[in-house]
Image (cartoon, rainbow, N blue to C red; front, side):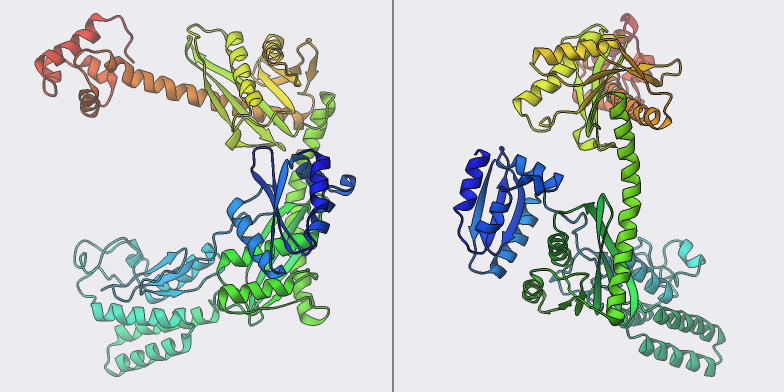
Amino acid sequence: MTFDQLKEKAHSLPLAPGVYIMRNKDDKVIYVGKAKKLKNRVSQYFQDTASHTPKTRLMVSKIHHFDVIVAASEFEALVLECSLIKRYMPKYNILLKDDKGYPYLRLDMKEAYPRITLVSKAADDGALYYGPYGSRGVTQDVMDAIRITLKLPACSREFPRDVGKGRPCLNYHMNQCAGWCQATMTAAEYRLRIEQAKQLLQGNYKSVAADIRKQMLTAAEELNFELAANLRDRLNAVEALGQKQLVTAGSMADTDVIGYGETAAKACFAVLHFSGGNLLDKEFQVFPLPDDKKEAISSLLKQFYLSRGVVPKRILLPMEIEDSQLFAQLMEQQYGRKPKVHVPQRGDNAQLVELASKNALEEATQVTDKEERIYGTLTLLGKMLSMEPPKRIESFDISNISGTDIVASMVVFVDGKPHKSDYKRFKLEDLSNQDDYASMHQVVKRRFAHYKAGDKGFEEAPDLLLIDGGINHANVAVQALAELELSLPVFGMVKDDRHRTRALVTPQGQEIRIDSNQTVFSFIGTIQEETHRFAITYHRQLRSKRLKYSVLDNIPGIGPKRKQELLKKFKSVTAIGQASVSELERYLPKDAALSVYRHFHNSQEEVL
């Protein structure tokens, strides 16, 4: 659809709540949004595009067509929007990087020797689950703290199978385990410790401490001072553990405080988890500046809590959002608890929001400083090359040794950083001799033939093309592009005597020195090294495979099974080639052994 057709369709939409789904020319979903009134919201995209942020303008330019789903209510639209974002993960929606939820601690009391384990989610399997906890690291810390306090096993031994077998492991000697693998330890004592672990996981530190204190006094009365001393140490550990307040940041946290901060280039959404006034944990995500900060907070808020599987009693926000009550209703539907969502204006709660926002601003600032350095380098490179700062850079290199296994690599840098999902490797076709120019011509033409065909993984064209080599290599690349009726900025990478790129050269022969500027010199050097590394790695893989297997493939009477057997017994092709007939006959029939021996000793082929 044309822009005018999209605009006309938007104006024809109903003034009803619903969800709109933007798609590109390949019918891929690139954005999902909800609206109180579909007509008003969707029409905004096709009005004054100059008022949009660069990101929104880019998104609108990619819209080929869109669909809408009319909902019965705003709440239904909210639920549908969340579902579609999770399903399609659209490119232009602000998305959480980590949406795997909080982990749990699992304890199966049906086992003879139950173990506390970390799992991603609770299951209906009859085991006990505790949590969810704030993060995987926090959960691991809780599990380790309880295990060490009660001196429970962390090894891979299975009980009671391995009781009395072998020596105790290092944890026993470090006083972090009671040595349950020894025959002197009983299953009854283990079960008692596990019951205490259950109490600790439930927060009942005082009852566990009282039980241990009672055992300690009994042991002292019976003059069993060694046992009494051990119980005293365990009592101190439990009391210390209780003082740490190891409570969950999910099910036991009473307040989550949302912070928002932004710099000139980045924004950050932060969540501080509090329980009883104590800060438990912090989570955050940095993302590009949004068009609407309230809409960004609303979107991330829904994604955050729907992925975590739990919601606190209160959520404090830094600013009012349009659908805060709908969000609370959604949480009640999902988790049976309706959080109190509000924006504090004064007092302690307002100070907590200020603290969360300071944390968010700090995280955004740290990322921005790095991003600005990268952008400054790209801007400077663009000025040197008389072009706009290149967003996407592609670099090509050829690798071969004596004309064998000729391969090429294409590495991609986006916004100054490696974009490894777009890296490509090419095995050169119909080239038996070393010809770097023909190789470069072929690989550039193949890459951009895929681009013109719209093949997956090749859809985007670079802003800058870097070719390993000088003016002739650059001209070969230009020629390959011209044959496809394409024109892109192409520069050759000219090396110094230490094989570092000292200059970039145009196809017309103009050299641009970069070694006088350390920032650009280092950046181009990084691209050069990465391109070479990627090419040589692929070349070595192919060469190793050829040397390892092709020699044996050419021997009559040696099929896949015999080849595998020979390599297993002799470890290498070199050893096979040096073996005598009698040695080969240990693993092969006489005729096959003779065939192998004659192949290596009558052939002029080099054996490595």
